[in-house]
Length: 163
Length: 163
Length: 163
Image (cartoon, rainbow over all chains, first blue to last red; front, side, top):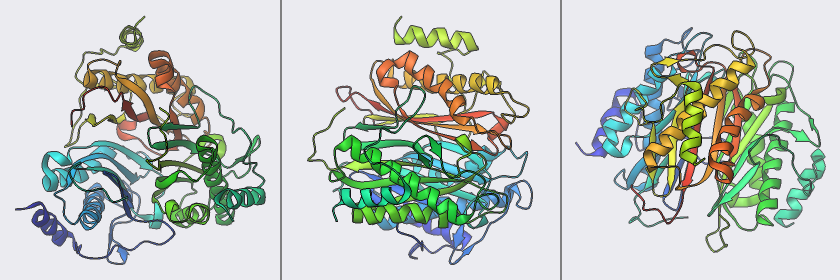
């Protein structure tokens, strides 16, 4: 399967549409390319208009649900990347992924939740998806989301820059 | 109004002096330019020697006060940027802004607080101020600050680099 | 003392081996170089197989222990940097360090904890170690670690890139 097909298959599993325009509010942008880098705003596990996984992980949100949330957030980042670049082909390397887990007191398996997102990157992008990562347990996330993920991505140099 | 004038007007509203040397402690720097990027250390809503908005947002700090804090933190970033570059003219794009909100349990309107900072960037910098963003609710911030903001900014290529 | 000797001396103090392969799990990497930048994944104060400083800073972990944790995390970043570049000589500038402190309610001395890490960078790298920084008090960290630190580092342009 091509990267695009792998992404589409993954999105179908969780109910995401890769062609959908991802909504945000406020005077910022969900994604921007500058020279050969792409920055992606923090993505919560929203499908359509709904944040589908909410709550404190380790309390009213299970670790399994949090992994599902992490996959959706990672897929949203990949959708934004694909929409910005036309395809995932120009991706040279995911430089950094930050994984924020809305955590209950005593929950310290943020790395395990983040692994679900890391696996999505690797399965879709292969070696270009092997990234550095920071996983944190935060107190509250926007809209009571269980997980939020952002990324910084390098684009192949041969590809024309759009500042 | 020029960008400089817009920034000065904003600063006057909240009691900040754009010519002030912003204080920090420790063996780090509030701002650094390397090649065509500027990195700005996390800014709390300090005016002069005082952190003017403290407490947990949603509990002993109102959302309105938190928006005020977000504006001050964003303005401090712009002051540092202007002082480093001589003016805001060389700013090509704010690549990323992270907004950390010291949140009470159950407060999940971090995006709304962050919007106040995003608006400052857009009003002062125009299109160059349209950034990617991650908003988080953290448990504690240095000096009990209600908000902390950091940024990564791209500078126009035609401008000479100072490594 | 050379940078390498300074790092080795520091590592010996806390029980770290600069030649050790630092372990991680998951489909990501502890460090990557792309062009002239190095990204380092979040490092907890692990020595060998053990996270040696755990708990909530300000409660069951003292500020002094947290400073020790911050030093170990910073040293792990420097070890990864040295292993990736062959030596610390090619380091042009530490652009950004994020310091995450697992904080008890009411603990707001994250900057003081971060200072211990900043000092390590300055002592080992000199001016190239003067960085921008964001210090945050988070609710939970992976493996109940007291501190987590990540970095973004610029490498000298004259040095050959390895993508």
